[in-house]
Image 1 (cartoon, rainbow, N blue to C red):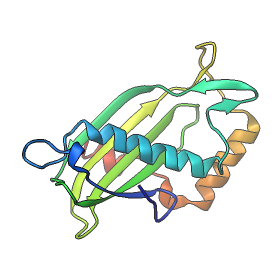
Image 2 (image 1 turned 120 degrees about the vertical axis):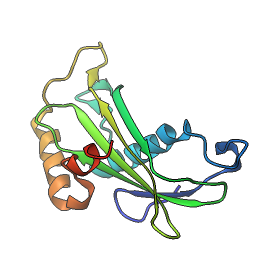
Image 3 (image 1 turned 90 degrees about the vertical axis):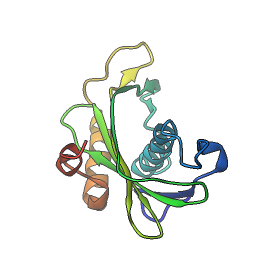
Image 4 (image 1 turned 180 degrees about the vertical axis):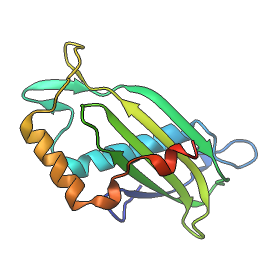
Length: 157
């Protein structure tokens, strides 16, 4: 999978990702969303780790998902996944996804995943350290195309 901007990942549907009709199996969406999410996190942290903070390992479990299927993807199709982050006042992370065909831009699916942030001792992290918050604010200012308020997606999910 390769990207063309900080929030874009492109890939071809592999044979193993299809069902008997040659259409991608729905279970692959969340794997593809994960690839897009971690690519965006890598850009946000500039190669650092959002999963380590002040010497503590963080866990970011998914607490909510939504997806709407809008079209088909078949074996060999090249897809474009755009991943967006919705700024939050807390440490909750909300990502939105738009999956389209590269050849004509037709929509394939949209989705959302919501995550909480837990410290290694399974306690919630309620507030980002100032340095992390500053880094996130800088990312949002530098890459506004990777940020969403979610309204465009929520209306269709």
